[in-house]
Image 1 (cartoon, rainbow, N blue to C red):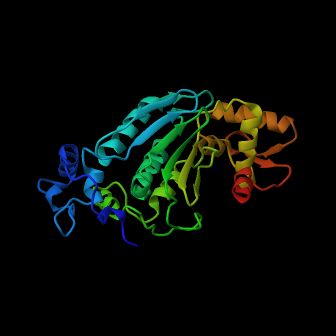
Image 2: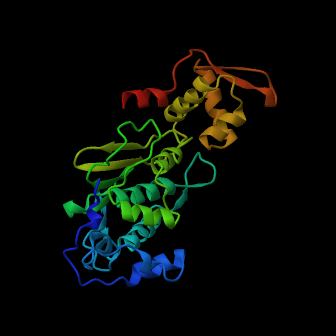
Amino acid sequence: MTSSETFTSIIQDLSFESASDDIETVLGPGSFGKLPLRCRDGSFNNFALLLSDQCPWSFEILSGQYGTLHRCSGSILRQVEDVLRVMDSINPRLRVKGRTGFIRKFPRRALEEGVLNAAIHFDISRVMDITVQLFSDHLVVISPGGMIEPDDWKHDATTSPRNRMLAELYRDMGRVNLHFCGVRAIRDSYLRTGQIPLMRKTPEFFLVFCPSVAQDLRDHENLSRRVADILAVRPGATLAMVSEKLLISPSVALRTLVRMENDGVVFEMGANNGRRFYLYSVRRPLRIERRERT
């Protein structure tokens, strides 16, 4: 597939102050001058336009409640860092009741990979913004132009980035490796959270859906369901195992298990640190059921 980056840029009066600094800081002096920024006739190509201070494509952060929160400008490299910086201020580390330690509402790794994937896959021929849309319980990274492949997200594969030159630059800078690890990293960042990120592609857009993990896990119904999911997969789990899997304190886990035992959902065997917990009725975990429905 011929990349649109190789086509002649409609803007030829370009400067690269921020991109040259960003690239040479990572790859060393003189590395920017080795990039394929020109066509055979010596004119700048669209890859150069992406890296230029005059880049016409933008990232935009939108709020479902307040509208536009921030619009980035300049080199696409600087825009990626800018949107992540702004999102760090919107998505700080916080303490959530019922959880141990500090967490972010939206996993930082998922957000970063979603933004990087959008940059290397969006269709520059559409001249449309890449948007990060924020809602109270989820965010969505929307990239114009559907991702080329793979068709089945359940299998690891090598992707074919639409913006191949930019993808190879990011690979050399150590930000991506182009072997489907971005999507896998998004998925892995939600392990043990009870939430599942979604990736969807259409001919028009590629979307990364990131649900919030900052929930008050003291809610008995919600927490009981997630404990039952663990016991469905790991019958005989210990209190320590349940606590570790859900990232909750042992005291919160024990209170939940005791209530579930009183409700006739769970029974235990053993004593003290040797106590193990089982479901009365064997069932499939909710996480698997959700995945099958999608």
